[in-house]
Amino acid sequence: MSATSLHVTLISETFPPEINGVASTLGRLSEGLRQRGHHVELIRPRQSADPLGPTDDLQLLCRNWPLPGYPGLQWGQVSMHKLMRRWRRQRPDVLYIATEGPLGLTALRAARRLGIAVVSGFHTNFHQYASEYGLGLLARLLTHYLRWFHRRTHATLVPSISQRLELERRGFDNLAMMARGVDSQLFTPGRRNQALRDQWGLGSDDIALLYVGRLAPEKNLGVLQQCLHAARQSYPQHQIKLIVVGEGPQRSSLEQQLPDAIFCGAQQGQALAEHYACGDIFLFPSLTETFGNVVLEAMASGLGVVAYDQAAAAQHIRHGHSGALAMPGDVDAFIDACNWLLEDAEALRRVRLNARQHASRQGWPAVIEQFEGHLRAACHLPPGDSVQPHAAALVIKPGSSTPHG
Image (tube, helix red, strand yellow):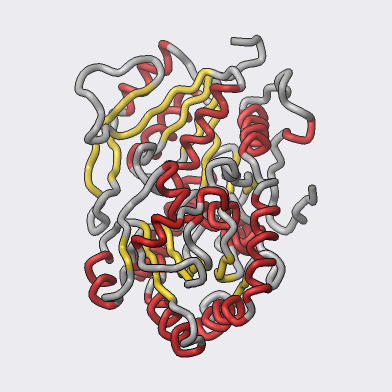
């Protein structure tokens, strides 16, 4: 380990091999830091696949509790005294807290007592999720709690400009931008596989409308049925099928609403990349994303993406050039955007090519470098030998402008 290396502790209630955007991002960040010569410690809940027995210096597995009403997700719980003993024995330079549940709160309290620097990430709009589940009062309480939590960290990293503006409006401060990347060698049009499309009952000229993500109320999935119906009415000359990749509490109800859609379940790695590449148009109607990694994955796979003009889509899609955007919440505009891609095969081909070209420039190495800069700034260390000056952390105060480049 070099003299400029960091001892970083990541705290999260989700991590690979769990399948969600937060877990995927943290897997990339932790591996990227290790490749850059840093010592990375992980604190997370024990998963069903984890072996029993003691943990080591690289990770601490704690008790897990199911998240009520949200199958597949969990909270973690650990004693603050256990964390303090561990960190007195081997003190981290900086903590990165990715989730604000009981585990993250305990880590924050322990770090503050020990004087350890803390950076937090805003990965999930839990307050908006509560609203989607009809829990308006809980949503307001969660907003107060999240604001209180993040104000006690050196900086809160947010992945998109729209997310930063939304949080500023709600009174958050010390916000800093940290981008997301995509593996454009894994997610590539070259993985298109006609054998898989044959399983879906689609010829080479047929259209696959694809959705990838959790099947849950906050993803606004009722729009999929409306979009499919409108597309088939407007373009009866095409065979158009909806392909749904993912799992979640809404799967059974969606299968009833969409009896001729193809539900592929959760996919990972190369299999997921093949599912993307075998699509044609990617539908992403969610209104609750902090970013939406799937948007970049779909673009890298050469799909025409239809999304609302926020989060990842707002940052990475030029309407009419590399995808099609609709004003947030305007279902008719979302449907029109999909139909625009369907009406002209040459326009769709051009959009798909432009999407691929843009996404192929959004690699993870620059993101890891930027992340390292934020961590160094929190513990007041100069950039390491491998870090360029432009990667130093930038904390954005409310009302300030966003830098370019």
